[in-house]
Length: 97
Image (cartoon, rainbow, N blue to C red; front, side):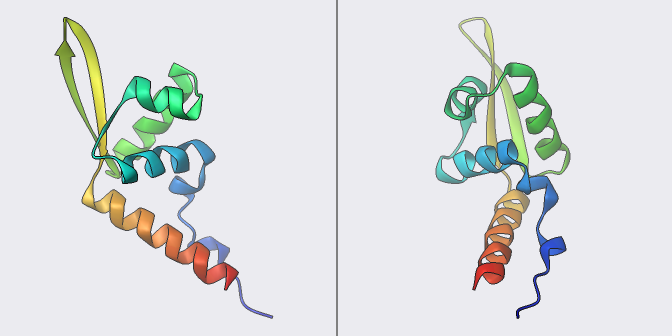
């Protein structure tokens, strides 16, 4: 039987909502808060908490601007976030092989 190092999995990414956020940002260059919210069907408050955790870890960056006098937050993966996500996928693949 193979040794499964489940502790090698990045807990920050392993949350369902944070995994969905990271996946969305991996595919696109950046995404607005409302786009992410609609894609993963999260509430404003819940999504904000998860985005903040990823931002604090420097996995994502946020750019805030005003469009037609309305605040718009755009999120994108950082290089550290991209590397962490690729490592996360690699570790999952190693566990199931």
